[in-house]
Image 1 (cartoon, rainbow, N blue to C red):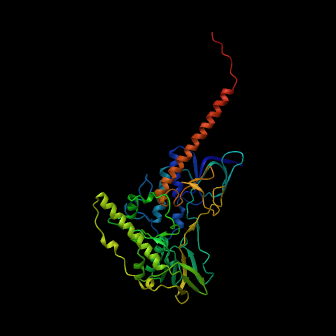
Image 2: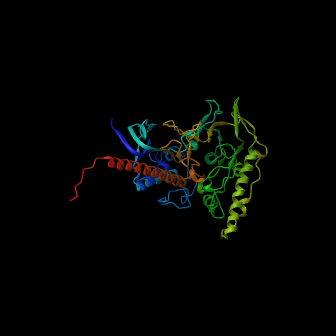
Image 3: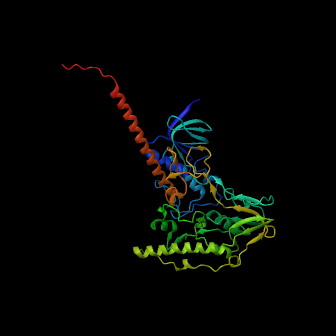
Length: 434
């Protein structure tokens, strides 16, 4: 059996894998990128039809290439994002091999590196970079009812309103995915119930600048860790239809029914927490704090940007907030489907190394694993708040590539020192000087 050897193997050719390839290539590190499907496959097949990027094109890109034929302030469609990464991989001549699945990675015993089993044979690699991203396994909570009369899908499987049967829809989860899907279903004429948990609600834009710009100049993208207690707080922001600030009360005034967090299902009913008003109030506080910080920045720096007092207007509470629904009979409400916008978990079953904690989460420092020679890139908060954005992945990948290049220098020194020691120990012929 022929065994292929490579210095660094990158697993995954999404945005993280392409970014790693660029930086490794720039540093002269021999590497190979394996992708079990196509480049940027998740953008093609793990997203709904109308999805667009949550950041504008000027922001959500790599430094070396702009989006073709797209206004910098526009939001790229999922097809445009996938095409962008394909074009980027061609531009940098990334050594991507598609249609190859990595089945296991194990550390070698008594010799350096790892043995990698793939669908097309065995590869020996000195280092392995896991660039498979955070959106690997859709998570549906165990409270999901076992009811064959209900159509239940995760947001990863949702494509468009026509996919769902006639009847009302319960959308569980009000982060970026949940709120966009809920609004799309409402616009399609569906009766929609949206289960809203704790969330941040940044302005889409304020005083003529997108929220991505504001987080940048305010230094928030560089925050190195979450605020305590915000681990389960989602972010409600959207670039759909040109981008707009998410306002749950406006959605309710337009016909959507808001409910609190979904607690349980029993006897054909769904039970909600009584936290809806508190969750909306906390979201408002987050929203207004962003406006305050932006206003302070403008004053401190003497920047000329138009005032926007109307941005501080909060609509009155709709009835579903002032008199919240705590229990709902699914049949009476006409609910025939549930969309679970409840996030994803990572899946590293193929990575059989000592690099994970007891909960299966990677142990790492800025992507450098606790297992020497193993790296992670593409995870949220890998090094900073911006890590989950396209541009943040690019910067994280540069740090990891630098670490790999430094390790190669140490090993190169060792090899050269060994060679010199061998030369010094070799017998020398006597030289006669006349």
